[in-house]
Amino acid sequence: MKIVLTVVGKTTDKHFIASIDEYIMRICHYVPFSFEVIPELKATKNLSEKEQKDREGDLILKSFQPADYIVLLDEHGCERRSID
Image (cartoon, rainbow, N blue to C red; front, side):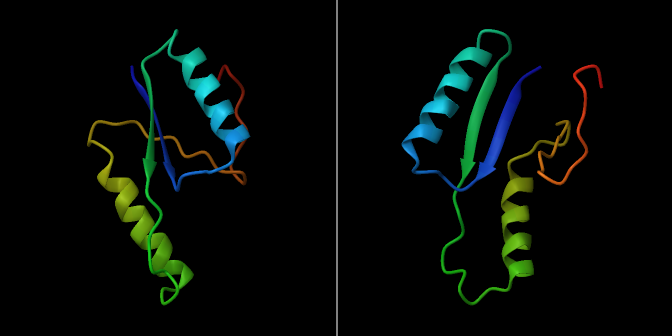
């Protein structure tokens, strides 16, 4: 199994970047892991929120393979225990 964390947009916060790098270094000892950044859309002033989400969604979906198992991390999602 290989884990790929795909995110939209790059952060510039140096503390956050350091935390991401630390996490990647630690988890790579246990499982193949990679971190992919999908660039933010440009010229979004004329797009509605739905159009922007649809375009970002298309970019995200293009990064997946048909056999991939996808897990969405969302602050409004269900909390799972490790055993789940």
